[in-house]
Length: 461
Image 1 (tube, rainbow, N blue to C red):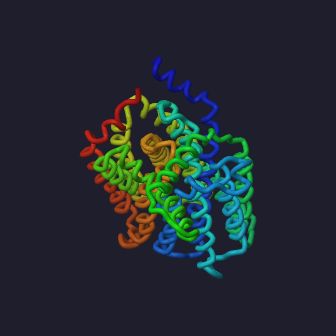
Image 2 (image 1 turned 90 degrees about the horizontal axis):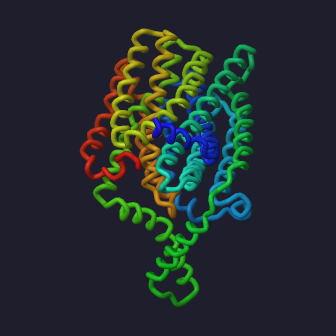
Image 3 (image 1 turned 60 degrees about the horizontal axis):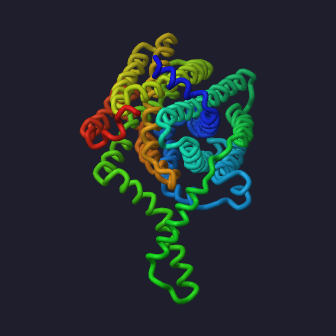
């Protein structure tokens, strides 16, 4: 009881409120490029295969590690000095999201699907870039030795993300439903325009988040650049010296974060870890990519989806994320990840049952609640685990590498989820059974790597 009470007291830390807020900022853009875009295209009569291919926009989340070193090394003129290194990058990306979301008001899939695709891609690229800064800011707010607080921060990040995604998504879908009932000519475009108010509110909230001091990080990066420059051959003329300095910057900013990760974990453990991260959530991603279309296909309205999938899901995942952090602290990350993987696969089978039964609201609510439970506890364990692996000098680059690898399978491969449904002839039951089996390779790898990764999976002390 004392252990549980001490763990719960961690949530009184004011830093967790900041983590919650930046989690909201991270989650909301997914409403614009996933929920709204998918249902809008479905409303326009596009096939599941075509809608699924729009998922390639999410590849930015899988590839943002490529430009993450820039967010560690490059300072935004004027803004960095006034807002801090991480917040400056977030504000710039929020501005890009605002412009692209506003542009959606003047677009139509029927008139030019390519234009809609570009706008979605711009939002996704800006969102994926700001996530690099958001994750770094979250990790840097908490000390590496504050083990219980790391798990709590992962929980608050999860709650915040799903608050942005589910609360924002519910508001958007209720708005679409209301506009359709009122006979509005362009309900989807108008909803996008109204969603810019949420973006502005998120940006205003960011002004209340203060960054931790980055002096030590900046000094370590400067030392790495000097060391890299010292290893370069001497250059005689100005052009050669400039090229040498650029090469030293690339070595220090791009290679050194990767080398540091492999040095800290060992090559074999690092590769095993990367394989697990890549495979862990692929089944969940396939389900999530098609879930809203499945709900409507099985007979639920936009209002039903908003209530059961968004609002109920939001409330339950907020509670379950906190439970997930307690679970991780109490039992350790190995057992947490293993149990969560099995639970994720099991809940996917509930959707196969719903597909067989039809639009049963009781079963819908049960499936959503249990799915959100497994999503919450698995996400908290997963985020806490990869956060612990990151150093504090190259936080953005190292976390982006791990998170991007996980996103690679979840976004790029899940873009073919609609093609899988079409190939199965619309047999949703078979689709959900297949998604349940997708977690098995990751769990096999996790079990095989237990001894190698024991240092990260033991119960926190």
